[in-house]
Image (cartoon, rainbow, N blue to C red; front, side):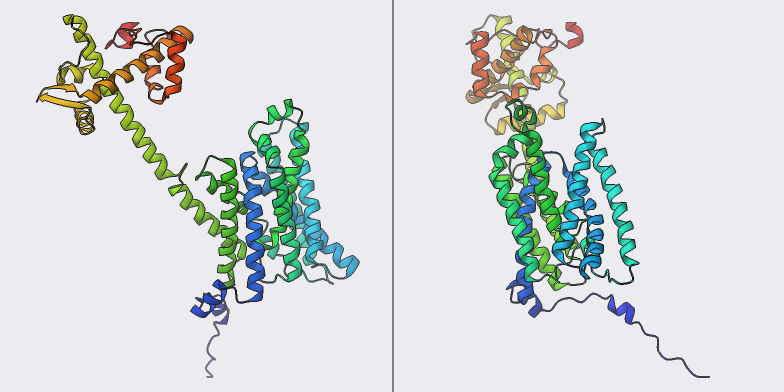
Length: 467
């Protein structure tokens, strides 16, 4: 019986993963290949434009608009291919395909605006409707393209996943030209777009053409989305628009700085993604570019100087310590104040017992011990003996200021906000730690109180007992 030959596993081998050599990495890093230079330059410029335009989209709270627009481009690509084959015998011209994508993309945006203005459907629902309908139409059109006997639709799937390796100089000029134009328009309209994003009602009341500015912004989004189809793909282009802007938001609260950071993050993401895609051609370029942007986003989310997780946790920790210190100093001062009144003493830094302090507020023994130890380390409290303490010289001044600010805010709430005296203490507790020097001066001027005011409620009494 004849033995069968060895089985071929070539199909599995074709799907293997080959790590690039050092020579290949060096060629990509130094941009020695002509095609690599084209791809890296185009994706870098596209990233700059996407990051800048995406900032306005994010601040306008229309992140899904880019997603709806990109999905609306799919039927335009298929229709443009069919028309190109029918009229010119060739349907894979990038200019023709992008023109078709632009038409249906803008049509989708127009439908979203029309649905929003002529019905009670909100933005997210309108964008979801347009996204699903146009994407379904695009899938149907691509099915028709696949069944055309006289045309080859191979390569159209690159507009879904992104493919930069086949870029030629003419494509580079087209993509870079549109991206640079969108970049320049965004910079020229910076003041108008800023007003539109932050206060649309004020812009309308001042006579600004809000609808026209809205349309111009969406046209810029459409331009960047359409030219990014070849590099990133229509499924992931929304991430290239929004992720750099969201990452930049963690670093600053200034709009101009955010725009610069977003553009840089988008450009670097495109550059790194294109480089990795050149080294690993089996990986879709769009996915790699978006993964690079996502890596920068997660780094920014953790280490961002303005809104990063670490920065916020440190700020919350400092605020919690400040609140605990001020509550402790105010409690000591209020006990001392009570002692002055009971013993007819002049205001001075007198000793108080630890037990008095423990029962003055709802502290547990462990909490109070921790607060006192920290205040002692900050030179605000001094131990007289093992059960008696007093304020230091600096602690007495800080306690006086803290108590005075607290009572000024209490009196303001009582006299101007019509809040009952039995309720102002807790409301003041949540605000007094954030009072600036200017706000305290305004309270002094408004209430005409320069010295320590009396508390509008009995100190140490619970709200239930006060009522």
